Length: 107
Length: 409
Image 1 (cartoon, rainbow over the protein chains, first blue to last red):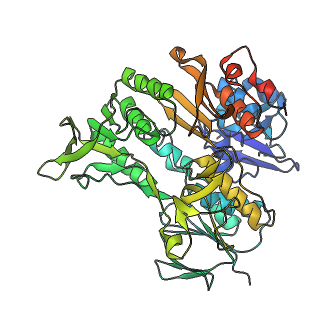
Image 2: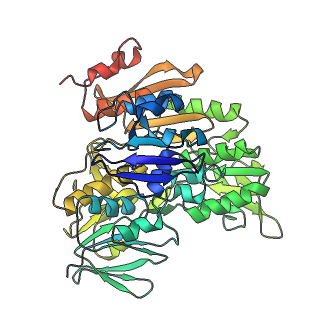
């Protein structure tokens, strides 16, 4: 199963096995990764699953759609060029090793 | 030892209170008590992704089992609080157990309003609010051919869209002259009527249901209207609103109106008791009046507000209300409360299925409904929160970037 590494703002990291097809947000919530909330359940309404994606993985991710683009505009922590919403990233084998950092706040 | 916090109801509001209390650093015991025999779960998918099998049970649970033990939250499921003994600061449960509290949070939710007609008790007449009810609808939907949905509000229309996407014959019966009449402008109602019709749903407004006819096996077979019309059905799903669960509070001598009455801190007249979520009749600055809201946003934000207050950071509730509904491939996002609006203007193109409606009252923007315009919705929440001075002319003019208006004092 492909793995994802979640890095907390403190630097502490958490490696999680994520089934292909499962979103990063769902996986983080299931595994009790602090700092990923997903209040709206993954429908791109709430901006509480914001992450920063390690640069070398950015090109492998699906492009940002209109709804995600709008919601990224209202993240609580600063939006950076590697900001994404983890509910919009579905795991695939090609993303094995995906490393993301959790922002200091979500709301 | 301190008795800590007892939370009645483990829906979104109750869950959020417990989680937020721990996030606030609250150290006392927390009991989270719910009637349903499930882990706390999300309700929005129950009428959409869950009945279409796009989301499984494990995807709609709010947190895994371990979350509750890890955070020292005593999750009690399959039990019900039957009485509040305010003098003793304790609650009695149906199982016979008793729990003491320092602080009591009533997140009792609401229950389905029952269809008051003959035949409503027949087999095949279902409601949809809980996970178990959604499972029942999902099972029946599989074998049903003709589905009649009573109620053209969010839930009814979402169920209709889900059933239609499975290829079923679907009829929606709405008692009012238009769809979603209490929450959107006529323009938006018309848009949804056209959308559902185009996708093959029969939508009937001004439809006063007078009875449900059954067969010898006591199964629902048709829905009758007062005007004599009859619609064949092998599954009837009723979504005609809810009644707040306020009896527990009322029986304990607390004031109730359209729900449990609370102040701007979501506190009842008893300072040890708060009420939040679907059951709370609260003063809302975006309504300019007391309201009771049924939404994920309201439940979660009120849970967090109460948790902060209990943890010593007392603050009034003032979150911008927002809602959404997904029907077919169209998303309606609502910000603010449009009730009582005097003027509405449109931005974008309804014919292209991408537009927003801006509602004004006394020349002030009070709400925005956006259809497939997610950026408008997000900007609307900011405009409302910052009380930005938007005019109807600016809202209707696509060359004006509304985002730029938000910081104008």
